[in-house]
Length: 284
Image (cartoon, rainbow, N blue to C red; front, top):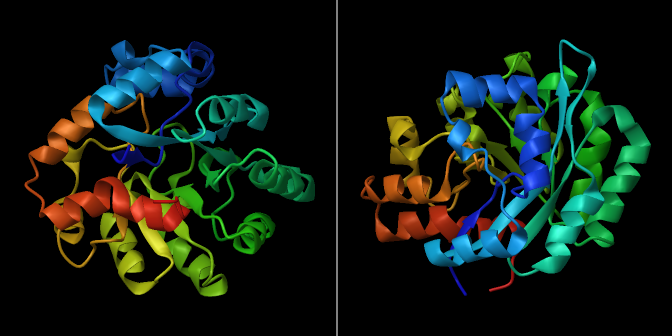
């Protein structure tokens, strides 16, 4: 089937939801208490989730083996194993896409793990949640991972903008992508979560660099900045891709709200599918 592609969908199984949200006090506080979205924290078995995707016309979801640290506590908050995500990928290889989360403190061992995830487990890219590690995304600790992704010809998705959790937001400021894109022009870089509140910084870099893209994960379409909607619908066609950060944003509510934006057909197709196909090199 051909349908929408969600480039950031968190592990959706009961165990995945428990680990990332119910057992993660900072994420639970922000998403559950502050934002009132506790009803979203429900897990599904893979066959149930695929049925939900079918009903909504969703072709693929990219699921990161998320590596998220607690900045103030000096320990990991979410630490999904590659093997757990690989089980989902193996069960539905045409529907679930693995992304290898990166812990920069694993250094070269982490680089070797990343390579195994791509070569042995069939993952299609890397994923960085930088804030809890306290290391800006243009710092040296990340460069061995960027180099390996460039060598393997897979994209890197990086959360950009502020951190909703109690972590230093400056680590993910979109302007820092400039240094990475200049050093690795062959590396496809995806700035996720719209870069908010520095949305126009991310737009400027996506417009400047052929290898920089935007993912709209983490923010409901009805709240997207007007400048981002204009970019999606004009000179940014082919530079922006759909993502939800599910279960923060449910697929059905995101798709319904996108319909209200009245995008040009070409722009909507690029947002929901075509850009992701190009960046991740999915087969048509």
